[in-house]
Amino acid sequence: MTQVSMRVDGVTYTDEVEPRTLLVHHLREALGKVGTVVGCDTSNCGACTVHLDGQAVKSCTVFAVQADGAEVTTIEGIGSAGDLHPVQKAFHEMHGLQCGYCTPGMIMASIDLLKENPNPSETEVREGIEGNLCRCTGYQNIVRAVQQAAGEMAGRSDTLGAQA
Amino acid sequence: MIPAPFEYARPTTVDEALQAVAAGGEDVKIMAGGQSLIPVMRLRLAAPSTVVDLGRVAEMRGVREDGDALVIGAMTTHAEVLTDPLIAQHAKLIAEATETVADRQTRRRGTFGGALAHADPAGDLPAVALALDAEMVIAGPNGRRTVPASEFFVDYLTTALDEGEILVEIRVPKLAGEWGVRYEKFNRVAQAWSIVAVAAAVRRENGHIAEARIGLTNMGPTPLRASATEAALSGAAASADAVAAAARSAAEGTSPSSDLNAQADYREHLAQVLTRRAVAAAAGL
Image (cartoon, rainbow over all chains, first blue to last red):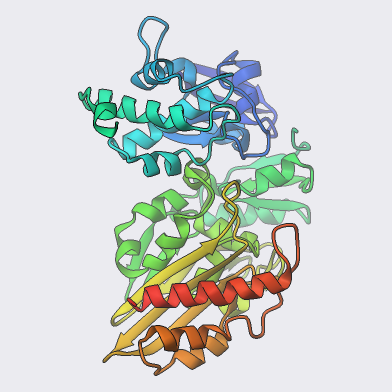
């Protein structure tokens, strides 16, 4: 067992883990952060995306020991029921989900994209979330949600009007 | 699935890493970004007894200039490569190919050196390293040695790295003169692995092509140079017709596989088409 200490959604946790423990399993099973889900378990689908020191990563493809000393942000740490993150709000308003299983990862990847590119074109959104798979929506409303969130975060309200 | 149990070592210097690798015995695996190794361990296709994690070896990270070469630390992530000003200035072909590797999240963790040492024939960076005549700087128990890319890729998933050795940095000669570059890749939308891809760097002089370097991805168990096309382009007119004629020999000397994605003859066809497109774009045509 190896001792790891990490700050997750603002709280510091110190635990003993087996080196083979994947970060996503540590988050869910040891820390109870079940908002982050396991989708494909093959590094393809991106449902398990979290931020590691501010960067989006697939937490099924990181060992918990690699996150020792790091700052981890999960979907549970970006907003609350009464105060949603603009990207959460946009997914809600634009119906950017059906079953919702890919949504935590979609939102965490989208926040990472918008930090790098605050005003992405439709193509840039599609490329920016290429590491996240949705089997329900055909991506249309997801892309609209990300663009709406970009507008809101930049203080604009006309993003979709301009596009339509 | 959960990987099989292993011992974990996290060195902070190259010397410590070499010691950890030596102490790990025969069944040791070196982990760079882990974006290929962890999936393989999860499938239990690999079950090393020891994993040496290079993630904290700061001296293996970053890009610097050394005279006529760029020196890229093996642990420099794909995301770092994409935003590095030296690479943008002197090795744009690396950035073009890196942009097509996997996805945003994977590029945050995956590393330039890790991708080269993994030597997957469908990976994008080996063919680029080969086209640019890069050199691999390898640290081992008896010091360092340098191996040219043309001798580094030995076979499917196999490199010139010996037991106990670590790829620490990659030296990439700066392109001197008027070079254009292009990475042309053909892949399924749902998978970023190349079915075939072509890395081209072309130097133009007085309306002619003075020199072309062409690396082929996934046209055999190792990356290959399209030598016949390179020879045909040397001194050729910088015209679409001349490029098309030269590209017809792009698959000469290759040995592509047949698999679910493509038959070998289809790959040969792709190599010709993608070479024509890549060279034409690199030559500004």
